[in-house]
Image 1 (cartoon, one colour):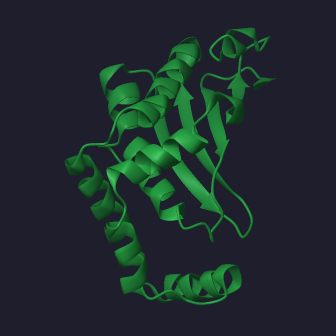
Image 2 (image 1 turned 90 degrees about the vertical axis):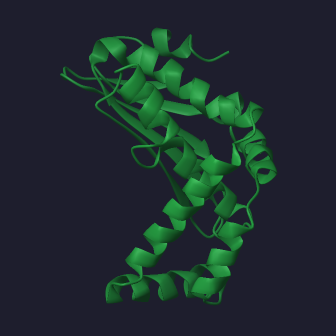
Length: 192
């Protein structure tokens, strides 16, 4: 846990975990976990932290896949007085993915989101060039759109549980906070 003390009206929280490289076959599983967790207005974090509890102005997650490593990042912008409750709620949603199987309807919705977003991006020539160039550099070959869609469609609820249990563990969590706090103590106490 690292706190950067600044006089701000909004606290900025970033919870980051080690992710997977672009060459890891489970990278598509992790992308779907991120979609379920914090991508879009129907994601678990948006619904629980923002809509139900009113703890965040903005809350979302994303993944990064590099050649030899990756990351999962969850960001939240919150009222400073709600920061610890927001972190606690975020942690609960992250750890719930390690315990409870994702219902097939929720998984199907995440697959549609990830596939739809990818297909929309490929309507732009710059995105097509980035698609091909990044894959050539990172994978040594360019996967076809159909290959990627097939990999996304093949992800199961069991895959989600397996990858979440492997990556979403206390020892690998890193929290950075920027806001009007003098000490890290209140945030450190949220972790066992």
